[in-house]
Image (cartoon, rainbow, N blue to C red; front, side, top):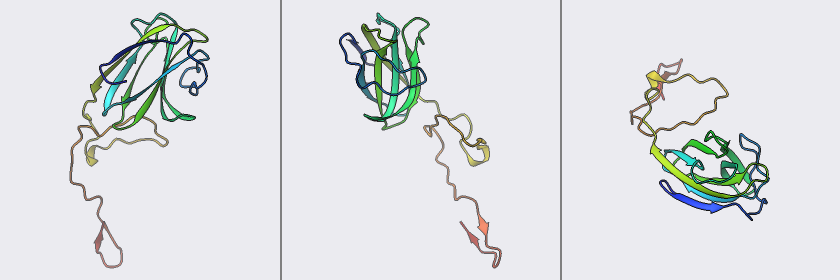
Length: 166
């Protein structure tokens, strides 16, 4: 699957074996189809809103078969029984996209991948404007568009001779 691409398919007759783990919504027991996707530091929207004839679900994972990590999942995000998700994709990471149905629902679908460049950081671009994070902190972050500032790090002195070290 690539940015700007639309694929059509059906989950009718697809096997339910190989569904990924629970991903922000209950995993599907219906047949599923899988796609791989790699983006370049972009905001990605994967949508089943148009042309999907059944109660769909969509899940995105990283990792590998049998060792998936959930990125995001959706059930009914289109305001109807169809699903859509958006996430910030990291350059070079392979994402695994699973299209499935709610419960045992199956049918024809249209999956659209839309990508936009992530905006440059509004704040936190320099050491003096660093954002304080609480521990633990979870989130999606990017350095796309940030300033390449020279930073020698904090300067410290040894107490005995007053010599600087870094």
